[in-house]
Length: 256
DNA sequence: ATGGTAGAGGATCTA
Image (cartoon, rainbow, N blue to C red; front, side, top):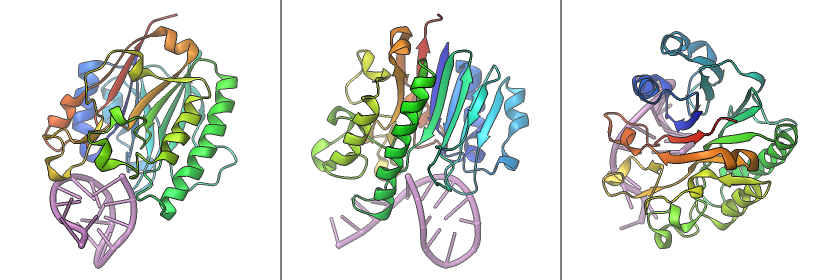
């Protein structure tokens, strides 16, 4: 079973890339972030034609998440319970015993800003929710743009980025609290190339210079970690015309 | 000193 996550930074712009990518990789599940579309504008027909069902939680201009899947999911949840948030950032869906969660964690903009405080509060509420989800669903896979580079290995220049947003101690601690629920960073279950990143700024020719961060992750519960066969970042997508600034991350799970 | 690019929407805001 193949599952993936991709921050597409506007599905309207990126739909051709997404359709090509689905045709090439044929994942069972693809989690999308930053669709930036109201649900009524979601390109359901085009995605159906590609052989995928859609589950969506969108809004205009910012945010928006979706799960594309070959099989129908159930038990959809599109908000963190007991947490007031106008921003559409989460979507959970169950396939058989597998609980899939698609998340777009806040960026935080700048350390100490209001958006940064929102990010840390959001992560606390999110972690509490994931705890409960893991109790209900032992086979849980969490996909998304976490907007946190967990380790200095995940940063193109750790010294230059030290203390900055996406890298700061508080953000990394929040990420580790999430991991401490019993999740594994699937990418680090395997030997990986040095300087592997999932996001490169559009500015300063960052991709050409590999000035990136690894902020898109697939986190797996213990039962799924045992079944995980591979995890890789498809940075080829970043070389396309009008690319997303993020690359997809793909995991393969052995069948039970 | 605070660039630079992309997307949305139609001036800035977000990333």
